[in-house]
Length: 305
DNA sequence: GAAGGGCCTTTGAG
DNA sequence: ACTCAAAGGCCCT
Image 1 (cartoon, rainbow, N blue to C red):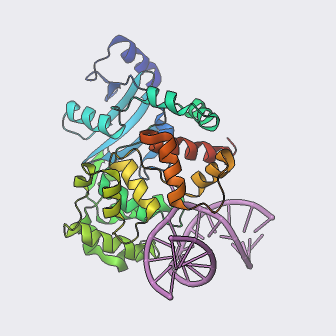
Image 2: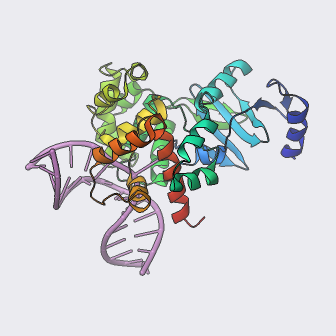
Image 3: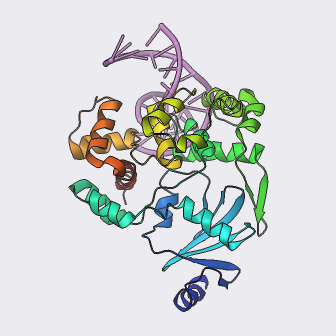
């Protein structure tokens, strides 16, 4: 029912302010696979319900639904213009994914990944939420990370509802710092509670200006992040790629390491730094995208799809 | 500088 | 049911 109405809108009008069934349409010229993008372990708070993805960007709640030629969305944002800007930024529509995929497809394994998951995009997330999320990811798994991050949001974030559905903004570092390690332990974060509480304190004290790191070069920003408790090479690279515009970052987790072993012949015991340099030499500013495609591809393969 | 064990808990093979 | 690795690591020795 939704799809039928959308078809009508998409064809008839490419202006985003057209409303159908309470939703606005945002035309998107870039390749986009919303599901792959929101379910490839970059972000942990988007929930799918009947094809719609519910979540929060900045201070506003959204429901997103992909259709031919773009996105249908409903939002608590006060103006359509603001919503379009937030969506544009989140989905990194400023990246020319066609060109990026063309470059990456130069090698076999990646070309398969690209062929299979065209439209998988990196996200430009809020740096603090992203940092907190990946501190929670240590020796964990996606369902659990997701539960942990959502628990923190529901316990300390401000509610922002949309059409009767309650969603939560992610709480600021001050709020998390004041909650403290014990409370976070109580939310089930385990040994990550101490890391998150301490990092929150440092961020709240202004000892690190996350947003400012968007302007710093990759290695400089990374060094700053790695000063924070609970942040090593891998977590830092995630934050750099998924929120700080450092697309030469290359987070190497177990899946990516496995991909590098199986498809590129790397040794099992290769050091993180060694693999990182290899990837950056090979893919340069595309390393972040290469990582996301390799990760998603291998992960789905091993899940049997 | 490199390697190994511990850490909170949950998940999912077997 | 029940056990026991492994889990999108980091930290300390």
